Image (cartoon, rainbow, N blue to C red; front, side, top):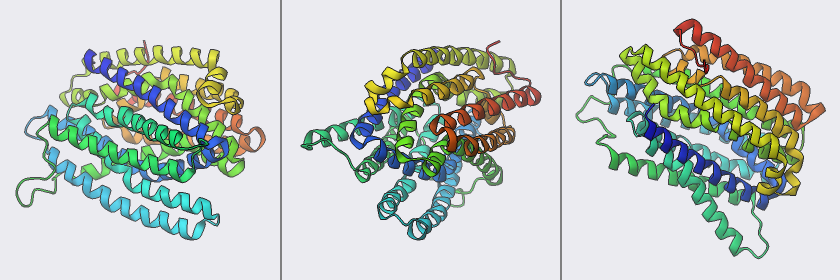
Length: 426
Protein backbone atom coordinates (compact mmCIF):
# COMPACT_ATOMS: atom_id res chain seq x y z
CA UNK A 1 0.00 0.00 0.00
CA UNK A 2 1.13 3.57 -0.66
CA UNK A 3 1.77 5.07 2.78
CA UNK A 4 0.98 8.66 1.84
CA UNK A 5 -2.33 7.73 0.22
CA UNK A 6 -3.21 5.52 3.18
CA UNK A 7 -2.42 8.25 5.71
CA UNK A 8 -4.25 10.92 3.72
CA UNK A 9 -7.28 8.66 3.29
CA UNK A 10 -7.26 7.89 7.00
CA UNK A 11 -7.22 11.61 7.80
CA UNK A 12 -10.09 12.27 5.38
CA UNK A 13 -12.07 9.36 6.83
CA UNK A 14 -11.51 10.61 10.38
CA UNK A 15 -12.67 14.07 9.36
CA UNK A 16 -15.63 12.54 7.55
CA UNK A 17 -16.50 10.44 10.58
CA UNK A 18 -16.38 13.46 12.89
CA UNK A 19 -18.17 15.84 10.54
CA UNK A 20 -20.74 13.21 9.62
CA UNK A 21 -21.45 12.42 13.26
CA UNK A 22 -21.86 16.12 14.05
CA UNK A 23 -24.21 16.61 11.09
CA UNK A 24 -26.27 13.55 12.02
CA UNK A 25 -26.39 14.62 15.66
CA UNK A 26 -27.65 18.10 14.76
CA UNK A 27 -30.31 16.65 12.46
CA UNK A 28 -31.37 14.18 15.15
CA UNK A 29 -31.60 16.92 17.78
CA UNK A 30 -33.61 19.20 15.52
CA UNK A 31 -35.96 16.47 14.33
CA UNK A 32 -36.22 14.40 17.55
CA UNK A 33 -36.60 10.58 17.41
CA UNK A 34 -39.97 10.28 15.67
CA UNK A 35 -39.31 12.69 12.80
CA UNK A 36 -35.70 11.52 12.60
CA UNK A 37 -37.03 7.99 12.16
CA UNK A 38 -39.20 9.07 9.20
CA UNK A 39 -36.23 10.93 7.67
CA UNK A 40 -34.08 7.80 8.02
CA UNK A 41 -36.85 5.64 6.56
CA UNK A 42 -37.16 7.77 3.40
CA UNK A 43 -33.40 7.78 2.83
CA UNK A 44 -33.22 4.02 3.43
CA UNK A 45 -35.90 3.36 0.79
CA UNK A 46 -34.37 5.54 -1.93
CA UNK A 47 -30.88 4.27 -1.11
CA UNK A 48 -31.94 0.65 -1.48
CA UNK A 49 -33.47 1.49 -4.88
CA UNK A 50 -30.73 3.68 -6.33
CA UNK A 51 -27.34 2.79 -4.89
CA UNK A 52 -27.12 -0.71 -6.42
CA UNK A 53 -27.04 0.94 -9.86
CA UNK A 54 -24.56 3.63 -8.81
CA UNK A 55 -22.38 1.25 -6.81
CA UNK A 56 -22.35 -1.41 -9.51
CA UNK A 57 -21.26 1.09 -12.15
CA UNK A 58 -18.79 2.73 -9.75
CA UNK A 59 -17.07 -0.57 -8.96
CA UNK A 60 -16.92 -1.37 -12.67
CA UNK A 61 -15.40 2.02 -13.45
CA UNK A 62 -12.74 1.64 -10.75
CA UNK A 63 -11.77 -1.88 -11.78
CA UNK A 64 -11.86 -1.43 -15.55
CA UNK A 65 -10.04 1.91 -15.57
CA UNK A 66 -7.42 0.36 -13.24
CA UNK A 67 -7.06 -2.53 -15.69
CA UNK A 68 -6.60 0.01 -18.48
CA UNK A 69 -3.84 1.72 -16.51
CA UNK A 70 -2.10 -1.63 -16.02
CA UNK A 71 -2.17 -2.36 -19.76
CA UNK A 72 -1.32 0.93 -21.42
CA UNK A 73 -2.86 1.17 -24.84
CA UNK A 74 -5.38 -1.64 -24.36
CA UNK A 75 -7.85 0.17 -22.11
CA UNK A 76 -10.68 2.37 -23.27
CA UNK A 77 -11.29 4.59 -20.25
CA UNK A 78 -13.35 7.19 -22.08
CA UNK A 79 -15.49 4.56 -23.77
CA UNK A 80 -16.01 2.88 -20.41
CA UNK A 81 -17.22 6.19 -18.97
CA UNK A 82 -19.58 6.75 -21.91
CA UNK A 83 -20.97 3.26 -21.47
CA UNK A 84 -21.49 3.79 -17.71
CA UNK A 85 -23.22 7.13 -18.25
CA UNK A 86 -25.59 5.63 -20.82
CA UNK A 87 -26.51 2.77 -18.48
CA UNK A 88 -27.03 5.14 -15.56
CA UNK A 89 -29.40 7.40 -17.48
CA UNK A 90 -31.77 4.73 -18.77
CA UNK A 91 -31.75 2.59 -15.62
CA UNK A 92 -32.39 5.56 -13.33
CA UNK A 93 -35.29 6.63 -15.54
CA UNK A 94 -36.93 3.20 -15.46
CA UNK A 95 -36.76 2.87 -11.68
CA UNK A 96 -37.81 6.50 -11.18
CA UNK A 97 -41.09 5.76 -12.98
CA UNK A 98 -41.69 2.72 -10.76
CA UNK A 99 -40.95 4.74 -7.62
CA UNK A 100 -43.26 7.54 -8.76
CA UNK A 101 -46.10 5.06 -9.32
CA UNK A 102 -45.66 3.65 -5.81
CA UNK A 103 -45.63 7.14 -4.28
CA UNK A 104 -48.76 8.19 -6.15
CA UNK A 105 -50.88 5.08 -5.57
CA UNK A 106 -49.17 3.03 -2.86
CA UNK A 107 -48.90 5.57 -0.02
CA UNK A 108 -51.99 6.83 1.81
CA UNK A 109 -50.34 9.17 4.33
CA UNK A 110 -50.11 12.66 2.68
CA UNK A 111 -47.08 13.68 4.77
CA UNK A 112 -45.14 10.51 3.96
CA UNK A 113 -46.21 10.82 0.31
CA UNK A 114 -44.69 14.30 0.12
CA UNK A 115 -41.52 13.19 1.85
CA UNK A 116 -41.17 10.23 -0.52
CA UNK A 117 -41.68 12.62 -3.46
CA UNK A 118 -38.66 14.55 -2.19
CA UNK A 119 -36.93 11.19 -1.87
CA UNK A 120 -37.61 10.62 -5.58
CA UNK A 121 -35.65 13.77 -6.35
CA UNK A 122 -32.79 12.52 -4.19
CA UNK A 123 -32.96 9.18 -6.02
CA UNK A 124 -32.36 10.93 -9.36
CA UNK A 125 -29.29 12.69 -7.94
CA UNK A 126 -27.62 9.79 -6.13
CA UNK A 127 -25.80 8.12 -9.08
CA UNK A 128 -23.94 11.24 -10.32
CA UNK A 129 -21.43 11.71 -7.45
CA UNK A 130 -20.77 7.96 -7.28
CA UNK A 131 -19.90 7.70 -10.98
CA UNK A 132 -17.67 10.77 -10.97
CA UNK A 133 -15.82 9.60 -7.85
CA UNK A 134 -15.45 6.18 -9.48
CA UNK A 135 -13.61 7.71 -12.44
CA UNK A 136 -11.36 9.70 -10.09
CA UNK A 137 -10.65 6.57 -8.06
CA UNK A 138 -9.90 4.43 -11.11
CA UNK A 139 -7.55 7.11 -12.49
CA UNK A 140 -5.48 6.75 -9.32
CA UNK A 141 -6.71 9.91 -7.57
CA UNK A 142 -7.74 8.02 -4.45
CA UNK A 143 -7.52 10.94 -2.03
CA UNK A 144 -9.36 13.38 -4.30
CA UNK A 145 -12.14 10.85 -4.86
CA UNK A 146 -12.90 10.88 -1.12
CA UNK A 147 -12.98 14.64 -0.52
CA UNK A 148 -16.47 15.46 -1.87
CA UNK A 149 -18.33 12.73 0.02
CA UNK A 150 -16.41 12.67 3.29
CA UNK A 151 -15.46 16.33 3.74
CA UNK A 152 -17.57 18.64 1.57
CA UNK A 153 -20.97 17.03 2.12
CA UNK A 154 -20.92 16.85 5.94
CA UNK A 155 -19.35 20.33 6.25
CA UNK A 156 -21.97 21.81 3.95
CA UNK A 157 -24.70 20.02 5.92
CA UNK A 158 -23.38 21.44 9.19
CA UNK A 159 -23.15 24.93 7.72
CA UNK A 160 -26.72 24.92 6.40
CA UNK A 161 -28.05 23.43 9.64
CA UNK A 162 -26.20 26.07 11.65
CA UNK A 163 -27.87 28.80 9.59
CA UNK A 164 -31.27 27.17 10.16
CA UNK A 165 -30.55 26.86 13.89
CA UNK A 166 -29.46 30.50 14.23
CA UNK A 167 -32.33 31.83 12.11
CA UNK A 168 -35.00 29.96 14.10
CA UNK A 169 -36.33 31.40 17.33
CA UNK A 170 -37.09 27.87 18.56
CA UNK A 171 -34.54 25.57 16.88
CA UNK A 172 -36.38 22.91 14.92
CA UNK A 173 -36.30 21.22 11.55
CA UNK A 174 -38.91 19.62 9.34
CA UNK A 175 -38.37 16.33 7.53
CA UNK A 176 -38.86 18.14 4.21
CA UNK A 177 -36.11 20.66 4.97
CA UNK A 178 -33.74 17.91 6.08
CA UNK A 179 -34.31 16.03 2.81
CA UNK A 180 -33.77 19.20 0.74
CA UNK A 181 -30.47 19.79 2.55
CA UNK A 182 -29.44 16.23 1.71
CA UNK A 183 -30.24 16.88 -1.98
CA UNK A 184 -28.17 20.09 -1.91
CA UNK A 185 -25.13 18.24 -0.59
CA UNK A 186 -25.43 15.65 -3.38
CA UNK A 187 -25.32 18.40 -5.99
CA UNK A 188 -22.27 19.96 -4.34
CA UNK A 189 -20.59 16.52 -4.17
CA UNK A 190 -21.05 15.96 -7.92
CA UNK A 191 -19.86 19.50 -8.77
CA UNK A 192 -16.64 19.19 -6.75
CA UNK A 193 -15.91 15.72 -8.19
CA UNK A 194 -16.28 17.16 -11.69
CA UNK A 195 -13.92 20.05 -10.91
CA UNK A 196 -11.30 17.73 -9.39
CA UNK A 197 -11.47 15.39 -12.37
CA UNK A 198 -11.08 18.21 -14.90
CA UNK A 199 -8.21 19.85 -13.00
CA UNK A 200 -6.35 16.71 -11.94
CA UNK A 201 -6.22 14.70 -15.17
CA UNK A 202 -6.55 14.84 -18.92
CA UNK A 203 -9.58 12.57 -18.80
CA UNK A 204 -12.10 13.31 -21.56
CA UNK A 205 -15.80 12.78 -20.92
CA UNK A 206 -16.65 12.19 -24.56
CA UNK A 207 -14.80 9.95 -27.04
CA UNK A 208 -13.19 11.75 -29.94
CA UNK A 209 -14.38 10.86 -33.40
CA UNK A 210 -17.54 9.25 -34.63
CA UNK A 211 -18.36 5.66 -33.80
CA UNK A 212 -16.12 5.50 -30.73
CA UNK A 213 -18.77 5.86 -28.05
CA UNK A 214 -19.39 2.12 -27.87
CA UNK A 215 -16.68 0.05 -26.27
CA UNK A 216 -15.91 -3.33 -27.75
CA UNK A 217 -16.13 -4.74 -24.22
CA UNK A 218 -19.72 -3.60 -23.73
CA UNK A 219 -21.07 -7.07 -23.03
CA UNK A 220 -18.36 -7.86 -20.46
CA UNK A 221 -18.86 -4.48 -18.80
CA UNK A 222 -22.60 -5.03 -18.63
CA UNK A 223 -22.15 -8.43 -16.97
CA UNK A 224 -19.63 -6.95 -14.55
CA UNK A 225 -21.83 -3.99 -13.59
CA UNK A 226 -24.88 -6.23 -13.17
CA UNK A 227 -22.87 -8.46 -10.84
CA UNK A 228 -21.59 -5.52 -8.82
CA UNK A 229 -25.06 -3.99 -8.83
CA UNK A 230 -26.59 -7.23 -7.60
CA UNK A 231 -23.99 -7.44 -4.82
CA UNK A 232 -24.64 -3.83 -3.85
CA UNK A 233 -28.38 -4.46 -3.91
CA UNK A 234 -28.09 -7.38 -1.52
CA UNK A 235 -25.64 -5.53 0.73
CA UNK A 236 -27.89 -2.48 0.86
CA UNK A 237 -30.87 -4.64 1.66
CA UNK A 238 -28.84 -6.27 4.41
CA UNK A 239 -27.69 -2.88 5.74
CA UNK A 240 -31.12 -1.24 5.61
CA UNK A 241 -33.39 -4.22 6.24
CA UNK A 242 -33.29 -3.66 9.99
CA UNK A 243 -34.43 -0.03 9.66
CA UNK A 244 -37.17 -0.91 7.17
CA UNK A 245 -38.39 -3.82 9.32
CA UNK A 246 -38.44 -1.61 12.42
CA UNK A 247 -40.39 0.99 10.46
CA UNK A 248 -42.96 -1.64 9.53
CA UNK A 249 -43.10 -3.73 12.71
CA UNK A 250 -42.27 -1.13 15.35
CA UNK A 251 -42.49 2.66 15.87
CA UNK A 252 -40.80 5.68 14.29
CA UNK A 253 -39.20 6.42 17.67
CA UNK A 254 -37.55 2.98 17.68
CA UNK A 255 -36.28 3.62 14.16
CA UNK A 256 -34.79 6.95 15.23
CA UNK A 257 -33.02 5.41 18.23
CA UNK A 258 -31.75 2.50 16.16
CA UNK A 259 -30.47 4.81 13.42
CA UNK A 260 -28.36 6.63 16.00
CA UNK A 261 -26.91 3.29 17.11
CA UNK A 262 -26.04 2.27 13.55
CA UNK A 263 -24.23 5.57 12.96
CA UNK A 264 -22.04 5.10 16.04
CA UNK A 265 -21.36 1.42 15.34
CA UNK A 266 -19.60 2.33 12.08
CA UNK A 267 -16.66 3.60 14.13
CA UNK A 268 -15.64 -0.06 14.36
CA UNK A 269 -15.31 -0.44 10.57
CA UNK A 270 -13.66 2.92 10.00
CA UNK A 271 -10.38 1.17 9.17
CA UNK A 272 -12.11 -1.20 6.76
CA UNK A 273 -13.63 1.62 4.73
CA UNK A 274 -10.46 3.72 4.66
CA UNK A 275 -8.09 0.88 3.74
CA UNK A 276 -10.46 -0.60 1.14
CA UNK A 277 -10.61 2.78 -0.55
CA UNK A 278 -6.83 2.91 -0.89
CA UNK A 279 -6.22 -0.66 -2.03
CA UNK A 280 -9.19 -1.07 -4.39
CA UNK A 281 -7.45 0.14 -7.59
CA UNK A 282 -4.15 -1.39 -6.47
CA UNK A 283 -5.69 -4.86 -6.13
CA UNK A 284 -7.18 -4.63 -9.61
CA UNK A 285 -3.90 -3.39 -11.09
CA UNK A 286 -1.74 -6.07 -9.38
CA UNK A 287 -4.18 -8.79 -10.38
CA UNK A 288 -4.10 -7.60 -14.01
CA UNK A 289 -0.29 -7.69 -13.87
CA UNK A 290 -0.26 -11.19 -12.33
CA UNK A 291 1.72 -10.02 -9.28
CA UNK A 292 0.22 -12.49 -6.77
CA UNK A 293 2.99 -12.43 -4.15
CA UNK A 294 2.93 -8.66 -3.75
CA UNK A 295 -0.88 -8.74 -3.76
CA UNK A 296 -1.03 -11.23 -0.86
CA UNK A 297 1.46 -9.13 1.11
CA UNK A 298 -0.68 -6.04 0.64
CA UNK A 299 -3.87 -7.91 1.64
CA UNK A 300 -2.25 -9.15 4.86
CA UNK A 301 -0.99 -5.69 5.81
CA UNK A 302 -4.42 -4.25 5.09
CA UNK A 303 -6.12 -6.90 7.22
CA UNK A 304 -3.88 -6.12 10.19
CA UNK A 305 -4.59 -2.39 9.98
CA UNK A 306 -8.34 -2.99 9.64
CA UNK A 307 -8.42 -5.41 12.59
CA UNK A 308 -6.44 -3.05 14.84
CA UNK A 309 -8.82 -0.18 14.12
CA UNK A 310 -11.79 -2.50 14.60
CA UNK A 311 -10.69 -3.64 18.05
CA UNK A 312 -9.92 -0.08 19.13
CA UNK A 313 -13.27 1.22 17.92
CA UNK A 314 -15.19 -1.60 19.58
CA UNK A 315 -13.49 -1.01 22.93
CA UNK A 316 -14.34 2.70 22.78
CA UNK A 317 -18.00 2.01 22.01
CA UNK A 318 -18.41 -0.72 24.63
CA UNK A 319 -16.83 1.48 27.29
CA UNK A 320 -18.39 4.84 26.42
CA UNK A 321 -21.32 4.01 24.11
CA UNK A 322 -24.02 5.21 26.46
CA UNK A 323 -22.28 8.52 27.06
CA UNK A 324 -21.61 8.99 23.35
CA UNK A 325 -25.29 8.50 22.52
CA UNK A 326 -26.43 11.12 25.01
CA UNK A 327 -23.62 13.62 24.30
CA UNK A 328 -23.65 13.39 20.50
CA UNK A 329 -27.44 13.15 20.18
CA UNK A 330 -29.30 13.86 23.45
CA UNK A 331 -30.68 12.11 26.54
CA UNK A 332 -33.64 10.70 24.62
CA UNK A 333 -31.27 8.49 22.56
CA UNK A 334 -29.70 6.72 25.56
CA UNK A 335 -32.11 3.79 25.15
CA UNK A 336 -30.22 2.66 22.04
CA UNK A 337 -27.18 1.50 24.06
CA UNK A 338 -27.72 -2.27 23.95
CA UNK A 339 -28.57 -2.18 20.26
CA UNK A 340 -25.30 -0.27 19.78
CA UNK A 341 -23.33 -2.90 21.72
CA UNK A 342 -24.76 -5.74 19.62
CA UNK A 343 -24.22 -3.92 16.32
CA UNK A 344 -20.62 -3.18 17.31
CA UNK A 345 -19.97 -6.86 17.93
CA UNK A 346 -21.15 -7.67 14.40
CA UNK A 347 -19.08 -4.85 12.90
CA UNK A 348 -16.00 -6.05 14.80
CA UNK A 349 -16.39 -9.46 13.17
CA UNK A 350 -16.76 -7.65 9.84
CA UNK A 351 -13.46 -5.85 10.43
CA UNK A 352 -11.58 -8.97 11.58
CA UNK A 353 -12.31 -10.78 8.30
CA UNK A 354 -10.38 -8.06 6.44
CA UNK A 355 -11.01 -6.89 2.85
CA UNK A 356 -12.42 -10.25 1.79
CA UNK A 357 -15.27 -9.02 -0.43
CA UNK A 358 -13.11 -6.38 -2.08
CA UNK A 359 -10.44 -8.90 -3.06
CA UNK A 360 -13.02 -11.23 -4.56
CA UNK A 361 -14.61 -8.38 -6.52
CA UNK A 362 -11.39 -6.86 -7.83
CA UNK A 363 -10.03 -10.25 -8.97
CA UNK A 364 -13.13 -11.05 -11.01
CA UNK A 365 -14.93 -13.37 -8.57
CA UNK A 366 -17.85 -11.10 -7.78
CA UNK A 367 -20.33 -13.93 -8.39
CA UNK A 368 -19.02 -15.68 -5.27
CA UNK A 369 -19.51 -12.45 -3.33
CA UNK A 370 -23.09 -12.33 -4.55
CA UNK A 371 -23.78 -15.87 -3.35
CA UNK A 372 -22.34 -15.11 0.09
CA UNK A 373 -24.18 -11.86 0.69
CA UNK A 374 -27.44 -13.31 -0.68
CA UNK A 375 -27.24 -16.11 1.85
CA UNK A 376 -26.61 -13.58 4.61
CA UNK A 377 -29.58 -11.40 3.68
CA UNK A 378 -31.88 -14.43 3.88
CA UNK A 379 -30.54 -15.09 7.38
CA UNK A 380 -31.03 -11.41 8.26
CA UNK A 381 -34.62 -11.30 6.98
CA UNK A 382 -35.56 -14.48 8.81
CA UNK A 383 -34.08 -13.29 12.09
CA UNK A 384 -35.67 -9.83 11.75
CA UNK A 385 -39.11 -11.37 11.29
CA UNK A 386 -38.56 -13.60 14.30
CA UNK A 387 -36.89 -11.11 16.67
CA UNK A 388 -38.14 -7.58 15.89
CA UNK A 389 -41.77 -8.12 17.00
CA UNK A 390 -40.57 -9.45 20.35
CA UNK A 391 -37.33 -7.59 21.07
CA UNK A 392 -37.62 -4.42 18.95
CA UNK A 393 -34.40 -2.72 17.97
CA UNK A 394 -32.25 -5.16 19.99
CA UNK A 395 -33.72 -7.98 17.89
CA UNK A 396 -32.91 -6.06 14.70
CA UNK A 397 -29.34 -5.57 15.95
CA UNK A 398 -28.92 -9.30 16.61
CA UNK A 399 -30.19 -10.13 13.12
CA UNK A 400 -27.77 -7.68 11.50
CA UNK A 401 -24.78 -8.82 13.56
CA UNK A 402 -25.38 -12.50 12.77
CA UNK A 403 -25.77 -11.76 9.05
CA UNK A 404 -22.44 -9.91 9.01
CA UNK A 405 -20.67 -12.92 10.53
CA UNK A 406 -22.34 -15.33 8.09
CA UNK A 407 -21.48 -13.50 4.89
CA UNK A 408 -17.88 -12.75 5.91
CA UNK A 409 -17.26 -16.39 6.86
CA UNK A 410 -18.68 -17.63 3.56
CA UNK A 411 -16.62 -15.17 1.53
CA UNK A 412 -13.40 -16.00 3.41
CA UNK A 413 -13.81 -19.68 2.50
CA UNK A 414 -14.64 -18.78 -1.12
CA UNK A 415 -11.60 -16.50 -1.42
CA UNK A 416 -9.18 -19.17 -0.23
CA UNK A 417 -10.82 -21.82 -2.42
CA UNK A 418 -10.88 -19.89 -5.70
CA UNK A 419 -7.83 -17.61 -5.51
CA UNK A 420 -5.55 -19.01 -2.82
CA UNK A 421 -5.44 -15.62 -1.12
CA UNK A 422 -6.20 -15.14 2.57
CA UNK A 423 -7.72 -11.97 4.01
CA UNK A 424 -6.85 -12.79 7.62
CA UNK A 425 -4.14 -11.12 9.72
CA UNK A 426 -1.97 -14.25 9.70
